[in-house]
Structure formats: C-alpha cells, structure tokens
Image 1 (tube, rainbow, N blue to C red):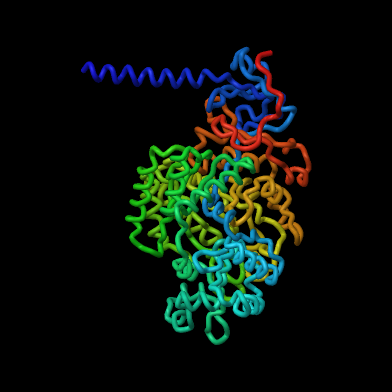
Image 2 (image 1 turned 180 degrees about the horizontal axis):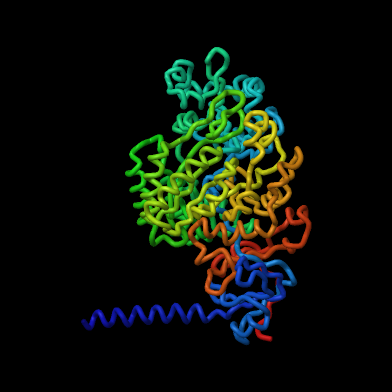
Length: 576
C-alpha cells in the first residue's frame, strides 16, 4: 500500500513538473495582424495568444494581453495575415515524398520527346531506378493518346534496353514498354483469358496485342514487379514530404490508402520525434480481394496498434467505388454510357457488400472515405452510407466522398442530409486538356454540365473540404483556391456557374477539413483551447485579387506552438 502511495506521489510530481515546465516559457502574443479564425463565433480578430502547445486567447490586442499577462512575449506581425494551419483532406504524403526524391515529372512534359529526355536523365542519375526498372511518375494524361511516339522513344533506342514504366499524374493510368510487358507476362493470350472488366484495363491494338497502356488491375500486376521501398528510403521520403507540406502552410492531413509500408514510415517518423503534423491514416478495403470482414478487422487492429503513437491515428477506411473518367481509361462509373464505347465504367463493389462494410465500420467508430468520381458511383456510395445511418443511427462520424467529379442533381442535398463531406480537388476544375479534350467529347452532355459541382454542393447545404490528392496534383492550397474561385485554365473557364467563394475555400482547408479528419475538436480554427497550429501569409488573402491570392507565400508555419517552417517577423519584445 505504501509503495502504491509513493507511485501516486511520483506521478503527481511528474505532472506538476510538466505543468511548471510548460508555464516556464512565457506566453506569446501575436498582435498587429489581420486574423482569420475559421471560428463562426468570432471569424476575425487582431491578436492571438499562445501558451505552450495551445491557443490561449483570440480577440483584440487588449483582450489577448489581459489573458496572457504583462510578462508575455509580444510579437508584432506587421499587419500580415494570420490563419489556422492548412489541412488537406486527401493527401498521399509519404508516396508524394517518395516522388520528391525520385523521378516525378509533375505533369510538366509538353511532348513525348521531352518526357523521354526526362526519363533518360532519371536513368543516368539513378533517381528513376527501382531495381532495374526505370520508373517515371507524374506523366501528363495527354501522353496516352500518343502511342506511336511512346513506341518510338521507349521501344527503340537506348531506353528500349530497360524495362520502363511511365505512371500517369492521375495515379490510375500508366504505359509500359515491351520489355516490361514481357516481364509481367502480359501478352495477347493473357488478356484474352481475362474477365471483361479486367480486360478493359489493358490497352490493345487492332490485332489484340498489348499496346503498353494499362490502368487499375493491370497496373497492380505490373506494380508487383517493383521492389518495395526500404525503411530508410521511406523515412527519407517522409522528411521530404514534411518539409514540402510545411513550406505550403499545411499542418495536418488525411492520408488515404496507407499500407503496412506507409504505416511503418509514419511510426518511424513519430518515434524519432520528427512527425511535426497531425495525420489521420486510412487503410484500403479492397472489394476485389474478398475477405472483407478480415480486411476490416485488420484496419481495427491497426487503429489499436497506433493508439499511443503521437501525431498519427488510424481513423477510418478507404474504399474505391470506381476509377477515372478521362479518355482513354474511362473506368469511372456513370449513369449514362461513354459516347465512344457504350459502356458505363465499372462499380468496384457490390452495393450490398459496401453497405454491410460501411455499417460495420461506422458501428466500430471508423470514418468511411470513398473514392467516387462518376455520378453513379457517387449515388451508390451515398446509398451505402445511408444504410449505415439507418442501421446505427447518426454516429456523427464524418464520412466523406472524394473527387466527386460528377454528381446527380437529386444527390446534391443528400450530402447535407447524411452528414457526408465532399472532399474536392478543385485544382483540377479548370479549362484544360484533362477537362475538355479528354472528357467533353466522351461523356453525355448533361453529365458534363455538372463537372466538379462544388458550388452546387455548397448551395445545397453540404460541407466541402479542401484536398489535393498530392502528388497527383500540387499541394499548394492557394493555387487550388484560385482554380476553385475562377475555374480558369489554359483552355479557358470551365463551367463558371460552379465558381466557389474564396472565404468558403478558406473554411474548406481549415475547419471543414479538420471535420473530415475527425479532428475538429483539436485543430482547424484559431479558438482558445485548441492546438496552436497557425500559418502567417505575405498578403491579405481575403482582399487581394484572385491572381494576387494565387501567388500567396507562406512566411511562418507553426504546429503545436512549434515553428516548423520560416519564422515570425524579427521584432519581438517582452512586456509593454
């Protein structure tokens, strides 16, 4: 009994020491700022006080100084714009980091010849080598319409001696040369023996021979040939991702589609004290692989295994409802057939099976996050979540649909009714090759008229969360907000009636994204008691033109009271 009493005393002393240590550092008052809080109770302020890892007070300079006291450190922000740390509700951070240290073309090549030059340099430097396979990611989707040029550059000459894989910037398409096709065992006989849906993931010529284009299941077959990244390389990728994202003001994200490799990477970063972001990680439930309940049980085991790992939480599951809509892939599931093929794309789950898993996940406290691009895929995903709500009541879990390029008008109010968040990547919502040449001629005009319907979801009362799908596109929030606000791109304006208000987009990348992560009680707004995540910008993004806002630069990023990028203006003083 005496031993137990001593343990209690020691624990109490330890907690007291921790409290005193936290209070030993002076409170900080950030003043002379244009503050956007994302808190509806007080959307704007002039000053913020920080105490250790938390926000102490938000308000006028006088109010904040009263809360912090006369000994607080005062930091004059020089009239700059202060806001909550930015949150990405769909970001493949570790695989994106791997791209930063590998050969990612980032959608930059303007021709196949430029792409071949990039690949040749990636081979010479070693950045593009995965074992003996030359691998280039971030390839522009228009490349897939240039098969003769791909053949000329990658099936002949020096690069033909290597197995080559070119991965599309959408993450769902690729092209491989003959040497890699042979290694993967992909030939006319293999393709002819596949079921109809899987056969559609292989491009073939008029004679039925593979032409190198692959998507979805075909990519999975080729990917099995790649060596997995070793732990040291994953750790390097994580460090690169953190530096990149913090430099853009991003302090938290949802990482959908994590496997054991990525989870181990997050654990390693956390245990090294280097995971300076809040991450919600989602394993995939693959309906094509069967054993759905065991897959769900594995996700629950991962949640338990990470319960005590700082800054990373396994908070839900990711489900693919369909593929992508652009030509020539056309695997997104539409209510009306593609105009060239007469097919509707593929729904990647049986509706009853998805409803069963969504209900079980919701009951277990897991967020359900669904990749749904085609309008019929969106309908079926909403139906499954509706089944979960009926079975379990409203759990309050922020289930979400991501990408949502096409939505039926009668499904728009269901986002509000079901409490489902629309996680949009609105950087893509612009007049460009991907939205015009590769899309408009190939789908029903009534579907095309609602492409990226963010404004329609907003006006129907739905919640919109900002997302990048990095490294599929840039993670730069202000570039994405510019697209959302203007719908402007290299080929003009895309459906201007769907333009988004700028302040709504700031909410999308702060409190709404925090809700999508299930973290709104902790982050997402500058509110007393929340974690001190904030970002200082070089301009007032609420008042400048769209073009000026697009070029916004981050000066200072703070996570939990700790500077992770840049710094505050060098004019602090103590006391008055």
